[in-house]
Image (cartoon, rainbow, N blue to C red; front, side):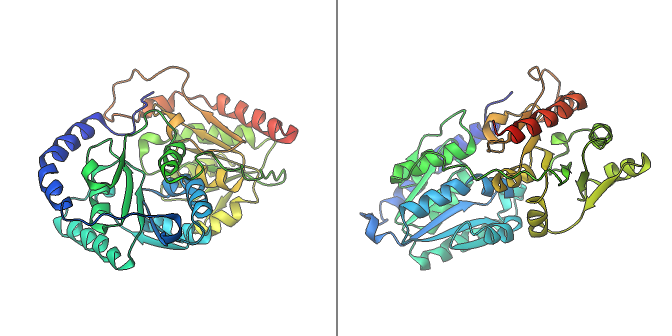
Amino acid sequence: MNGQVYNPYFIFWSRIISTLIWPFYFFCNLYRKSYSLNDENINAILICQYHRIGDVLLIAPVLRSLKIRYPQAHLTLLCCQDAEILARDLELADEVIGIEIPWTNWDWSLFKWLKVRSIARNFRKQNIDIAIDFKGDLRNSWFLWHVQPKMSLGYTDTGGSFFYTHPKPFPAGVHQTERSLQLISHLGCDSKMMDEKKSIYHDQGFIVFHTGGTDPKRSWPEKKWVELAESLSRDHKIAIVKTPETGPVIRRMKERKLRVEIFEGDLIAFKHWLKNQKMLIGIDSMPGHLAAYLGIPVISIFGSQDHNLTCPLGKWTTIIHPDIPCHHQRDHWRLCAKCMASIDGEKVSSAVVDLISRVKNRQ
């Protein structure tokens, strides 16, 4: 498993760019006003987490901790547009703003980058006291610098320490949520995970399959989903979430005449439906994090990527991964379709039985 968050190639070039642009921003920082803040005059906090929906769910404990530490502050969450409606529904912050950031989609349009810089500068009107970014990405740091908060906090794995008033070294090999909690601990926030949400088990609900993901290299083979449905449907009710990627799997299940419920709806409808189900089985993607957030038992299937960095967090969570490290030839520095294909359906089926037993016995 690869325990790195970023591609080493990306880190190398980011640090070179950081070194090249350092003199310009060092000069600009000489003319920026410095502030002395205390708890009483912190009224506006900006949190930037605009990569994917799952990333937003992973910082939910961080947002709670910040609100406890600064109850009087207006907490603004800047997230991707796909996460906006869910973040509002879950009331993760006082204000949620959805934004499309070009580099999260590998878009190098100069016009879009300038537009994003303009958006960052518009936040200056809000007189932000503290701005925080958790990714350790040079481009995110550049965005935050243009906000001009009184205090800025972020990691510098890819360089750009000059973009922050309080840069911090990137902690390697740490789960994404814990990494974020460590960052806000420098503000005096509690860095420990809050009490876990009460687990929910609905024995009459469905075992939900969510087979889709943004990258096919994360996917488990269609044939294995069908075989798993056939095996589990003898003792459990099975449902599958319909997404653009799940059409072939659903067709194969229908051809096998499997009794499978099909859920179709938007993200909020999915959330309300999911909280009444027995369990979710999915790949390394958002639905696993949502189920864990709701307190639903989760089985999450990982390939070559290090599950210790991004797995769903919850008492009733089981992670399935290959038994041996990846030695395949692959075209991605972290993901491997062959590793996903190596995971046997019986292993997942056995994990379902074990997890249900644990939940029923509350162990």
